[in-house]
Length: 118
Image (cartoon, rainbow, N blue to C red; front, side):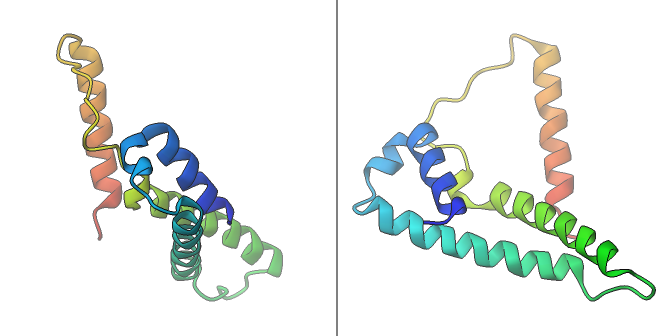
């Protein structure tokens, strides 16, 4: 199992125990999920990176590749269903703390803006 599959397995065990308990063969499921996530990350990294730019040194291209990989992984994991909150879990009510509720609303708006295609 690759590291993406292990991350999904650990996340599901901790944050989605009901869903995790319904998976008949977790090792196979998360192995396949990890491979799918890795392929998506690679595809998005290549999209973000593109070809070397005119005048770009191999070192600059390598550094840009690392940045594209980190961005691709972050975007892929944030959108992947295995890393979403458990829909059956109770959500906390922040309405009694207006400042905290506003911060969560701000974060939700930022997240939506980041994930909206241009």
